Image 1 (tube, one colour):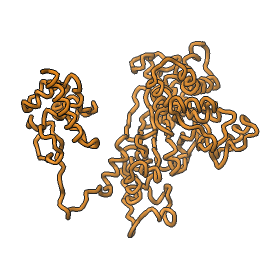
Image 2 (cartoon, rainbow, N blue to C red):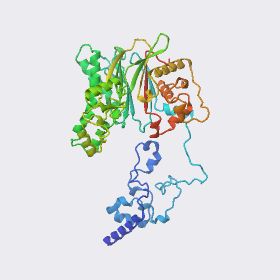
Image 3 (cartoon, helix red, strand yellow):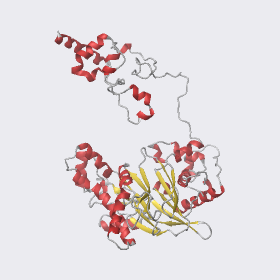
Image 4 (cartoon, rainbow, N blue to C red):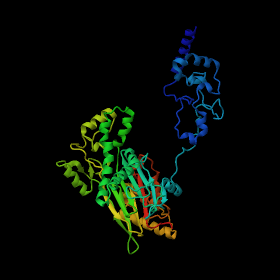
Length: 538
């Protein structure tokens, strides 16, 4: 009797399943709905109606014949019965879409109703960006902090505007316990010396081929460098500038080696495949790194640069203007010093640098980028075993890797006590649009505007404006005539002017693109502006 009933139920079930097309969307049910955790905060009523309770606790009561079928076959094919308890009509021809309220327990799990607009109704499309929407977009990820516990630093502003989705840039900023000689070792600003025991750090990390390596730098680089510097203090005596530079270099290279070279050991470990894949990802990606450290005890600003992000210091001139002092040099395939270094390291391989690129890559120094660092044999092995990136060959010859290094060029600059100055740090998304002196002049103009409450007027384009005018009539990069002074954040001010300034059509047009088309008109951009010895908003 049991066998006969079970066989009949299975036969009916298979017939029903055959009527359901394989492309039919699965209806939400309590056992099968997958909801991101973040929804639980913003969609409380929704997530409650789809709790993790079992089907037996549901308040709806399916028809009795369906219950009997479920009871008979649940032990054999329970996952296939998610839809059976709410619809006894198994003919696709008779399935209709009905409006329902999610407050009704009988329809809460039903498929959503799709409205049918009248044929004459125009399709819904996004409109262009208003002036207010432009401001909201470029200041969405802005921040500004006064600095009260580190002498010499008044305030800093920052912002990030992505083009990639997700954005591949990262940044870091804040205080940390002095690596040596500090009385404020807890890093909370409560020790003696009123912050002399704390240093400041700012960093921007321009990722490429993914943001995984940039994320590692955001999380770990300051701590690694701080530990290396701490070894200098433990040796006792004065710490010289050369020793500081070497410690910072060692921190950069050590972190990169732990990921790029460590991957070779990782690939042969007993670690689960999924974990290996996750740990290899930062090595596949790459990132530039620009890190600035300020020691208030010595008033020294140490800047370490790997790649083509740039740091510029502005100092007040006698005439009241601002002088741009470079604290880093772009390390690219166009830098003659970098070209000479690479050719000396790889004699006989003149094709290493061609067209301003290092085997196709714009930068000559970077974290990660395993395709430029791993032996070719290992690259082939990783591609086969872990679906890693394809080797550069045959397009580019890989004979004597590594061709890239994460070792930074480090500079140290003394900030005069009581002397107004500011530091601009940014990824190349800004520097592709303006020079160092233009950026300094823009912040200088912003400071003047803050003092007098200046707000610039909007520049209107006459007639039709489109991107063809960039090639014939309008400069794609920043020009002084388009200067806008309207933001309370100095970093946002720089980004606005890099994208079009007071020319609304230009800036709104650039921001209207979403990824991947956005990469044709703008790059990810991350900017930090640090003010020394003078609060610009006093």
